[in-house]
Amino acid sequence: MLRYRLITGPLLIVLLLGLTWLDVWAAVQEHAPLGLVLTGMTMVFAALGGVEMARLLEAGAGRPSGPVFALPAALGAAAMTACVWMSVGTEELGSGWIVVVPMLAIVLSLICRACGQTYDNALHWAAAAALATVWIGGGLGLLLAIYAQWGGSATAVSQGNPDAGAWMLLMVVLVTKCADIGGYTAGRLFGRHKLIPWLSPGKTWEGLAGGLVFAGAAAVLLCMTVLPSVGGGNADQWVWAALFGALLAIGGLIGDLTVSMLKRHAQCKDSGTLLPGMGGVLDVLDSLLVTGPLAWMLLQLIDG
Image (tube, rainbow, N blue to C red; front, side, top):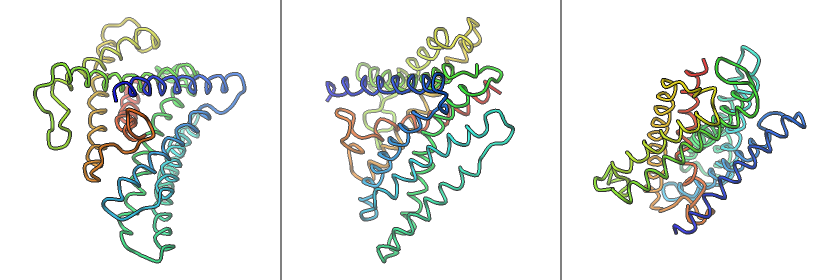
């Protein structure tokens, strides 16, 4: 299991790096819309996450249709990014799309129930479709919103170029995953005191401390190197970077536990089997579904 994890994890990072810089190259050299490549990737992962959510829901409400959750999740990710694109260089945010997509997801779920000539679990399906849109699609969409905002508009801190947006996006992802690695490593080496044994027996307070340290150190290191406009050699800014990393570590843990709750309810160890050694797409994205929105909110304070 660990061997497969050590192979799959780096491959996913390489994929993200490659597509991010392909997106930057397309925006600079080909004058393509910023985020076009990454939006496509995000919609695919959101759709896969929606399919896995449908599988988890089988245990509690019959056999839901995968497309009912895959399509809204993918559209939610695209809609969130589109709202930021429309707001770059203007005073008005196209926030209506954030409301329209979940509404369409609910209608789609009820139409699918009606096509089956049944109203069993209709409320459950409608609620789950909205959840897939807002949670999976919106969580991933806000990651792209960070890229679009920092790469497409020059404000107090952001540099308004695709490179700055790419590095900020990668910073959020890498800090989140460093928290996962730090928590896993510290938990295995020093874990003695259970954090929340009824939900996730493997989580320990020592692991949480390790995640906080790793994430804080990663955030400071990245600000000192690839994001000098944020770090800039100022000690106070390094303190804020460490705090930023620590908050993402806590957010990532919450994201992990929320997916664990769904898996416990469905009596599943993993959300899927697509990624060897890691489980499903939701098993990889769980922490990012919380750290994406959290980072976006924190960066508004920095960049305001």
